Structure formats: structure tokens, C-alpha cells
Amino acid sequence: MGIKKKIFLAFSCGILVITLLSYAFIFILFRQGYETEIMRYQKSAVTMNSNMVESFLDSIRQTSLRIIGDEAIGIYLSTGTVKDSLEKIKIRQSITNQFSHYSTGQILGSSLYLKNTLFLNDSLPIAEFFDSQTLNTNPFVSSSNIFSDTEVKKESWYLQLIESGKRSRIFLDPETKNFCFAQIIHNNYYTGPYSKEGQGVMVISIAAKDLARTFSLDPISDNSGYAIFTSQQELLFLSNAQKSLYLEACDRFMARQAFGGEIVTLDNQRYVMSLNSLQRYDLKILFLTPYRDIQTQLSHLMRFYLLFVFLIFLVLMAGIYLISNRFTRPIIRMAQTISTIHDTRNFSVDTLHFSKDKEIVMLCDSFSQLISHNNQLIQDIQEQTEQQKRSELRALQAQINPHFIFNAMDIVNWMALSKNEDEIAEIVSSIANLMRYSITEPDKLVPVSSELQNIQEYINIQQLRHSQNLVLDVDATEDLNTVYIPKFTLQPLIENSISHGLVESKKDLHILVHIYRSARTVIIDITDDGVGCDAGELNKFLDHSEDTALKVSNGFGIRNINERIRLNFKGASGLTYRKERGILTARITFETP
Image (cartoon, rainbow, N blue to C red; front, side, top):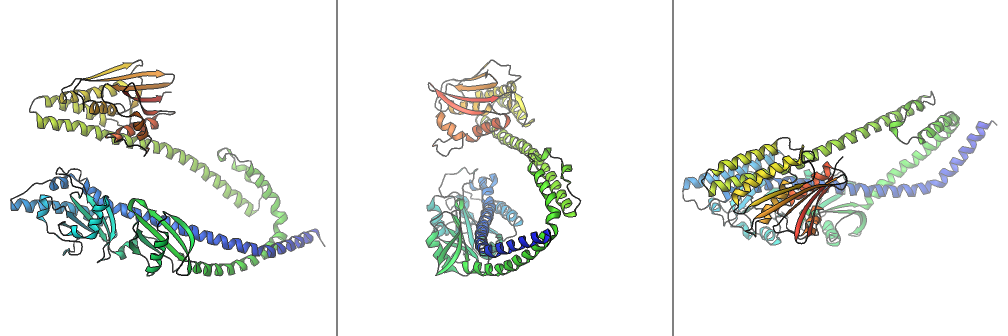
């Protein structure tokens, strides 16, 4: 008997014994692995559908947010008592058209039919222009309607929304079974008296059958399903008819925030259950799959597995005899070569040619393509990182520019309303300089001298508004034309000094900007003799800490400064606060090349 036959018989007997002994073990592992995969799939399905529900709720919430930020609606809501009938009709039609504009845009941007209803607070004079209806007495079929809230204030969902102290609430209309999103409207431009009920409540409704279209769950079995509950265990949506089953699961497990792929017993049957919470909207999504369905699928798969193992055994026998000697050597050489790869960018694919066999050549070519693709991905990631950094810088700069321009324009309005003098021309000139500075190349680094010139323009404007003297002193040991910083880095800090330093004091305000260098680090300290805040609380706010009770009126500005400095400079660059002997100091540090 030849050596090849002996090797073949030895390997064949060994593989046969190993196959028989390991089949049971593999069966157990396969069963566990399949169950684990089912758990993982259901958990991922929960996460995916939770994200879709949250995205859907975010999208319909945008309509109410647009109304909150609409200046025209704010003006209409602030309208006082109107006696002229024609004027009433005009105002009513105007606010109806404005509200319908947002509702129509919402419908065009969605494949679902959403019904928008605005209930105006009956304490507003404009509310008397509209009928008083509820969600269920609404006689109109249009997608957007406006009513007075006199009648709707008696309904339970409205009372629960007001009593909860929150701005929004999701509920199920008990009569129509529609899924409803209610949002209290506090328009940013409303100038009337404040009310915790806002200027009204906007309700966006969607039918339950349409809501199911927002999900894309591929169920594990035909009996799989899901339900949406509120945190108060109110059932909002159910994908199948097993209501009692989901209510039992809700009663037992709703106290938990989230879990995935647990096996539980409900109604004397085992189920794979997953739960996820949408804390922003106080919702929980519950998924259930009967465990017996998983066992049935597993039994079918194991039959194919047994046949597959038998076929693999035959193929292995033939393969051992035919290709063991032929492919062992080139494969080992290839493995040794691959093991020496530490950086694919420095590896030459020409060293992968070990054999003329077609399979080995294909394997080498595929691996060569993989290396090329990996190198390309590394290059793309590097480019994307740089692009992202530039985009973040532009976005942060774009946020600060309008903020300052609007502050300057507010001063123009104040002067125009309070004085009828030629000084307005001087203010407009200064504002023009400020606008030109903010609009021209907003993401470009500028010398500190240019930033200080811009600040002086701002102080000139503020000086006309305040009776106290505003004095800006600059103490610099560096050439201010050679030190570059992002635009509007110092201006918000000077603005804070003026805004807070003159609130409770009638004395003159002195602001000192001290610029000096320590080794390779440039330090800019800004101090004033006004009323200072708690430095520790400000530093917590800059670090996005939630453990602070400080109410920062301009927190957007100081956080923006801190982030832009960190993006533009390396090392321990950024904005910090400290307080010594009662004097608050804002310190900006950044490293220079």
C-alpha cells in the first residue's frame, strides 16, 4: 500500500471518528449560536425600530418648533382687541394661511397623512376669532385647522399635558384611536403676558394603520409582534391582536429601562422579549417572539445541517487525497508572508505570487485587492477627518456671527425708538463696520489687533447706550499683528463684561485685556471691575457638566469660544475661568508653532 493511501486512510478514519464524536457537541453549539443570533437580531430590530420611531417623532415635532420660531405667527398671537370686523377676518385668514403653510410642507415631506390642529389659548384676544372645538368634534376634513381651546380644556389629555409640567405629550385618542403628538406653543416672538398653558396647544394626529408604515421590522416569525407604551403603561400601538399578552408583559417588566433578548414566560408560554425606552418622549417599545417558533425553525435548520456535515465529510475525503500535497506548500508560504505584514501601505503585492494554480492565483489577487482597498480606506479616512474639522470650524463660526450682528441691530432699534437724534448715523456706521468684519471670511484666523479694533467699535456703540464710561485697556507684551486667533474669540467675553458689569452698578466699567507669552503658549486674560460669577460653575458649564446650578445667559457664546479654540490649536488650548480676590478672570490659552 502506497504512502498516499496510508495517509488518506489515516486521515479519513480520524475525520470520521472526530465527526461522529463532535456532531453532538456541534449540535449544542449550533443551537446556542442560533438562539444567540435570534436574540441579537431581535435586539437590533428593537434598536432600529426605536430609532425609526424617534426619527418619526422628531420629524413631526419640527412642525411645532417652526411655529414656535415663526415671527409672523408671534405677531398675530400678540394682537390685542380688534373691533373692526374686516380686520378680524384679515388676521384670522393670515394666521390660518401661515399655519396651513407649515402643515402643507409637512404633508409634502411625508408619505403619511398627518392632521394638524392648533388650539389657541382662549385668554388671547385673537382666540375669539375662531370656533371652539375638540379633536373629535372637528367638523372639517382638512389637514390643518385652528380652534379656540375653550372646549378642549375639559378633555383628559389636555389636563394631563398641563399638569405634567412638560411641553409635549404623546397619547392615544380614545374615540378615533389616532396616535397624537401634543406640543404647548410658546412662540419666541410673542409679546403678551406669560401663561404656563402657552399661546396654545398644537396636536398632530396620525391613524394607527398609517403609523405601522413607519416601521420596517422583518419579524423572526409570523407570530412576532411589538407594542408601544407610554411610561404610564398606556398602550399606544399594537402590531397584532394579542393585546392581553402585551399588557401582561407591560405590567411585569415596564419598570425596567431597557433589555434585549430575554426569555420570559407569559400566559404559560415562553417568549423572547426585548424592551427599549425613548426617554425623550416617555415611550417604551416592547417586542415579543414565541420561543416555540424559534425551536421549529431550529429543527428545520438542523436537518439541513446534518446533510451538510455528511456532504462536507465526503468532500474532505476527496480533498485530502487530491489536493493536500498540491496546495499545502504554497498556502504555508503565503501564510508566512502575510504574517510579516505590519502596515499594508508598505507591503508589495508582487511578493504574493507563489503558485500558478488558478485558486492560489485568485486568492493572491483577492488579497492584493483587499490591501489596495484598505490603503484607499486609510487615505479616505484621513481626508474625511480633515474635511470634518474644517466643516466644524465653519459651523461654529457661522453660529457666532449672527449672534453678534443681532445684538448690534438691537441697539439700533433701541436708539431709533428712544431718541430722535443724529447719533443714529454714528451707530449705523459702527454697525456697518462690525457687519463687514463678521461677514468677510468668517472662518479665517485674524490678528489680535483686528479683533481689538472690532471690539472698540462695539464699545463705541454700547457707550452711546450707557451713561457710565466704558474703558478698554490693552496690556500686551507681544506684537498683536503677529498673534492670530479665530474671529469673535474675544468679543463675546467683552460683551459679557459689559452686560453683567453694568447690571447692578452705576459706576464706570474698566476692562483689561492682558496678552503675554509663556514659552510656546500665548495667554490672554480678560478682567473687569464689575460683578463676577462663580468661576467653578462656569468651568463646569464649559465641560458640559450637568452638575451645575448656574444659569448662564450667554452659555452658547463661551462654549462656542472654547470649542473653536480647541479645534484650531493643539495641546491644552481652550477657555477657563478663575477668581482671585473677588476678581473674575477669563483666560484663553493656545499653543503657537
